[in-house]
Length: 265
Image (cartoon, rainbow, N blue to C red; front, side, top):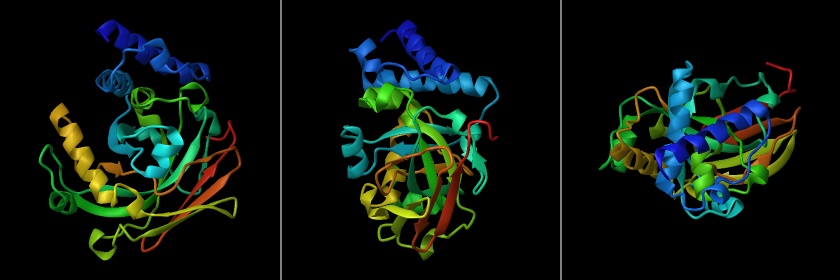
């Protein structure tokens, strides 16, 4: 795709939220688009958001588990940017009008204490860089009609990023085995999914390493204080106004997201 086509595709996605209406899959409009083109489209939107005063506060790895890859019909992870406006407080109503087709998934969030600069980052480097971990709920959303996404579509759509709720109990990485940390996901009091950290590329730490080594050659560092979401431990579930979702992770505690009405701020 040339620069004009990249700009057009980014504008389509930017207008989707403004209009409150998803768009047709980009891969249908731009059938020759590549993964590299999709990341250019993503970065074009990030530049618009930061120019408008938002700030990059971290990154997410998407489609890191086999369950999520099967659910979305793709075969590789991707990454997106987390901006300050995407973060919401526990137990406080999240306005549903900010989203188009929201789903929610449980994750283990890394909060970095040191910079990670790839390529060449190892698991040992990643362990040293992590300040603490917290349970998290990620709201994924798609600006593509009916979630009919290819890998190009989800990458261009900022890896289907929507919102983040972080738990408030920090835990040192040395006190928990993330691979074996079991997870339960409850919606409105009902158990809807279970999983474990090992579902995320064998360990959420592997996803952190993958991210650092993938974005490093692009000139992107993972900065101290940034949040990294490594991927979901279960399938994603749909969200409706009024839903309350709780993720509990063994050794880390729980995190609660309240999905409010369209009017609630």
